[in-house]
Length: 281
Image 1: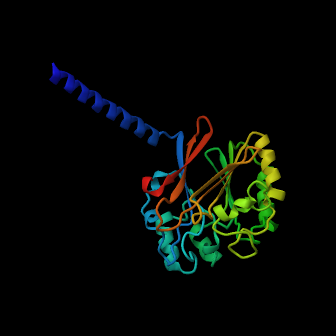
Image 2: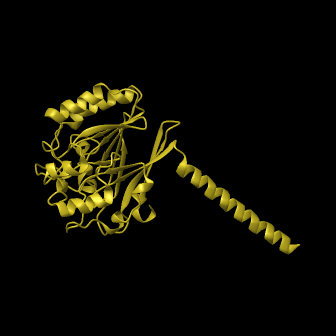
Image 3: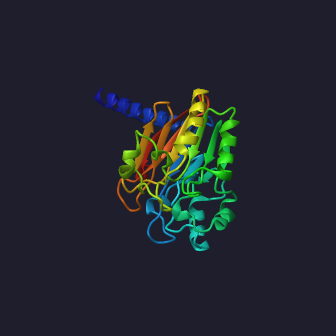
């Protein structure tokens, strides 16, 4: 009798394990469930090397890859580095969105030859509108042609459950009463006029009001920055109006580096996220 009970318990565990694996496989292959990865600041201090863990990640398991910038020490300085970065991230893939940082910005024409895209652009995918901004242009200010481009998107946005603003510098820290004092504990760079600094800019004065209007119309708005990793590996803040500010980035070679993983339920138009250690991806 004891042997029979033991065997029954073993069979129960086996069947439970198989059911769990089957359910996991269903989630992975369900076309209505998408996964996106935000990974940023993968650079080391020596071209063309990137963080060793980041180089080994299986990016094919994600439906979109959002690269938060500063991929290499001087990413576009030469073709050797660009080819190495491209071999890892497949930069011309339409689902790989690269948000240019100060360490990427040496040669924009070389970048375009690999990505086949300009420094700022918009993508509509899976019911979401994604806007890639160039925060190195005009020292963090969204002005000129980039302003016209962005406002054209925001003023005509239709049929989108979410608006995702992707950018390198944490431009929303400037001129934000609730967040300005956090710059030294969040951003890789402090406030200032330098090329890598969080510069005085017009995000909160001109762009943010339009984002609030979209949020009030029923569009979920999320802004995601990539210039962190030195002070912290993750940042999340929800402004009173319901707009989410996120950032993720790593410090190459350190323990505890994290990426930002998104799960998108297309049926219910719901987007969830969590910060995950690179070792667990």
